[in-house]
Amino acid sequence: MGFRSQVTRHLLPAVAVFAFATAQPVLIHAANWKQLSPPNSPSARSLCAMTYDPVSKKVIVFGGLGANTNLNDTWAFDGTTWTQINTTGAPPARNGVTMAYDRPTKKLVMFGGFNGFTYLSDTWVFDGATSTWTQVNMPTPPPKATGAMLFSDPVTGRAIMFGGYDASKPVPVYSVTYQWTGTSWKKLHPATIPIPRAWGIATQNPPQHNVVMTGGSGDTIRTDNTWLWDGTNWTQVFPATQVEQLIDAGYVYDPAAKAVTVFGGVAETWEWNGTTWVQVVPANSPSARDGAEMATDPTSRQTILFGGAVASGPLNETWQLVGK
Image (cartoon, rainbow, N blue to C red; front, side, top):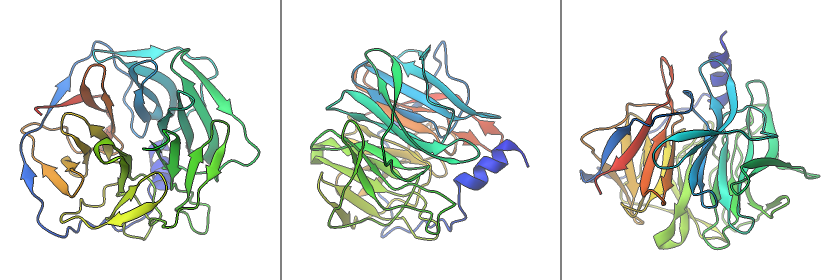
């Protein structure tokens, strides 16, 4: 069995993928995708960590699953090209990991992942002012997990983590919410707890001062449902149209569209407008892929998508969402 087959077996539990919607989706045609040709790019990969860093004012990428191995390199996108950052003390190689900006500490926070053999529970922070990674050791870290969803809290700006997956556990998918304190993870106890999931969609929706979450793998549990985090509690909402259960999709808030934008499934683009999910039908689009990542760069005013994997292997394409 090849490396990729071993990783895929651990990363993607056997699930039934449902694509039910409560109504036929409204289709809009105002957006388009444009493939960019940066002078330099990271090697092909999927399931990497990627987000915008307000300190360095660049989109940061770490690790991911390459053609034959997991990676631990760090790259920055300045709106025009990618540049590899020669960091000291970089985290070990991994995939299935996400990171989020923690406003009080002005650092990116990254947790867990999968190294090809075991699930991880280490926490690392990236300082965009010095381009350095630092491991944060703590007496009791959260349980090992891959596919956990990290996002910035809409009220405090703290990095928040929800969910994750560990095949070695009797109940492999988590439904716990954690808050980063700057030195450790604090388990939160919201009044309402969403359906457990990993590799889902969870990102800020600034106009409504909340976070929207949907999709992911719930093992044998349906995750085609939408939840909102307001900084204190989770609330399930029931939009007129529900996006299908997307796993390993790219997602980000797109200021130009004024909507949370998602790319996944069979090359579908969706937007959450604060009330319902709307499918976008662009004239041009990236091909269908798993494990692509998205980020919005407010400095260059671009929403970009990078990487992902198809049947023949990982990609290193960079795409820009335009036309709004």
